[in-house]
Image (cartoon, rainbow, N blue to C red; front, side, top):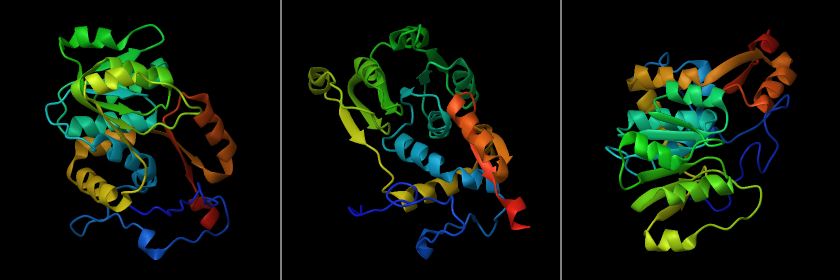
Length: 249
């Protein structure tokens, strides 16, 4: 892992410019077995958030495991689809948006929880679980979400942490230690390994392709970027894409 990584749109300006330069080795060709038609341009445009979902979901083995995902935004929805594809037994996802929870259910979640009125322990009872979740995928960066995840993990459970908190917060380290939990931070520093895995999974599974495509709810002309940002801020859309092809004419 490079300790001097500079990301476009993070440590340097992004692609809202007339020109943007990147190293040639960072240019990704969507190709599998000589075919370039399996991954649509829209799906290819979603590889950045999908990469976060795949990196997080595949950090720990999922076959036969019970998985808890906190956060049902586009990345959480994608993580649910990947976990289902990877062989998870039960998948529970939490959020406070009924609309996004419905979308997550469509991506393969067995139980969707509105944590403004329901607790994660209720999902365990609903699924007949006795010992807690084996794998947790924390997407939100919210203190309460992580704490409730810790409270509902099986002994020896593993948590992948993708969400970045707005401020520092305490967690129950006694529970982490006595339950022998593993907490693993996730950051975009395994891009090529992750994108290879993504390309292989998407190219060989129509079910997974369809699930990920459903997380893309809006494709707007680039000239309507203000509407796109408004949709994203509203929190009711999935992934919003801007189509630049008309500007090339």
